[in-house]
Image (cartoon, rainbow, N blue to C red; front, side, top):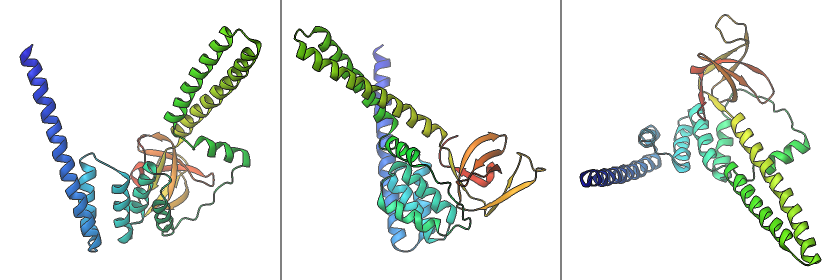
Length: 258
């Protein structure tokens, strides 16, 4: 039993030491990548940044610098892809938004966006104020508040206190229902959101998931699509103008696991 305890302790220390060494090595690689970027050696900088990604580490700064290096080399798809990855971690970062706008200007495909109604747009904006975890936390807080106010109403003796607790109970119940609804809607939106970037210089989009199917349209590198379904080596995609079709999995790169 004592031997097992010592072995666990040694393993924990070994894992901690390895993690510290990897972190230190990644810091060195990141600094080297930045230095190479500043020297105009963008391909070498990409190699350093990619080594960090291969170790399993990622960050908004790493993706942003990697995207910048690809942009300097006119690598349209990789630059947009890594800007998008950076935006997933820092959606409100002004520098990322500014740079990705420049990168998108290099794409060939001009795809219209179906305008949303005023009410759906407002609802989506409210939902996106916080993450699913934060909405769920607010729902739990609202539930606790409801329970406390209900108990206060139940045990209150004076009419004024009962009335006040009753109003508070109704308000907290309404807040609970709202936060629960927003949490589930946020989760639903997250599950439906499966973006990908076209990496092929030119990709043929088919009407059905097979090579014999008629070509529906073509897309070019850097275009962002939504993935709706997958069959074998085919992905069903949707564009912002509402068009759908099937594209080879090899022609796109998912921004999230699917």
